[in-house]
Each structure stands twice: as structure tokens, then as C-alpha cells.
Length: 181
Image (cartoon, rainbow, N blue to C red):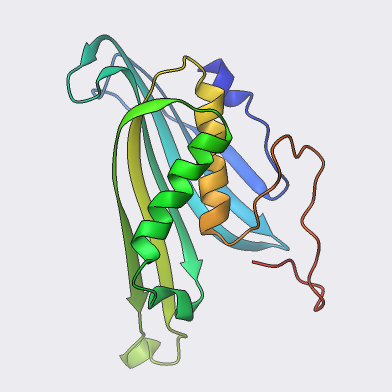
């Protein structure tokens, strides 16, 4: 679990260790993360690493990563019929990019739009994407899986991907002075 705490963070990620969940596995670690750019929270999520030395048939192993990543979307993206498939690809590509080997993936990609009424009528309509996923790490390197999840979270939040080994690489600001999202 120490390996997860040592994951390299890109600028804009605020991470916090959470209380370990009980009754899910004999050993576990949990973290939350927020993607914050220019004081705007663009996305948030959680990851839990479970370990049961006896293993679980459904896990197909002794470890399991369970994650949630959530972010607001541009309204035009919410109408894209391929959004769920794209959201799932963001996860699998992040795992591949970090060399995080896994088996038994499962999850859902949800898009939700909310519109205010009554006392909230003036509220701007919001559209969110939520990726809930779990997989079984098979490489013995929790840091790779943590880094992949953080990349998924950043992608959901609209940040451009950093190149592999992108330590010290900062996304270029757009012409308006804001970072592209």
C-alpha cells in the first residue's frame, strides 16, 4: 500500500488518504483525489485497493482495485452516443500507458444531466460523466494502477494527457489564458 502513497502526481491533483474500508477484505487502502486548476474543481474520485490473501473467485486474484471518477462535461459531449465506450477506453488506455497489467475488469460509465427548477430555476444545466470500475492487478505494482486511475480522473476532467515520463511537463495555456480542458 505504501507504493500507492508514493505515486507521482501531476500538477493540479490534490490527494488525500481515506479511512480504510472494513469488511471488504482483510487488507485495504483508500484515497480520494480532486483535479483542481485555477481554483476550479474539475473532477473528483476515489480508489480503494483491496487485498485478501485467500483470493476471491470473482476477482480472479488476491487484489482488487475499485474506483470512481466523476467530472463535469461540456453539454455537447453528453449527447455523443459513443461517450460510454469512450469513457471506458480512457480507463483501459490509462492502464496500458502505465504498464498496469490487470484481469477481470468490470464497470459502468454514466452520463447525467441536471436542470434546475423552482428555486433552482436560474441554475445552469450541468452534465457529468461518472466512471465506476474495478479490476484485478496482476503485476504486483499498485503504484502503476494508482497512476492509471489518476490519469483516468484527469481525462474525465478534460485535462490533456501528459506524455509518459512527463515529470515537470505542464499543459500549455490556450489563447484565452485558460488551460485547455
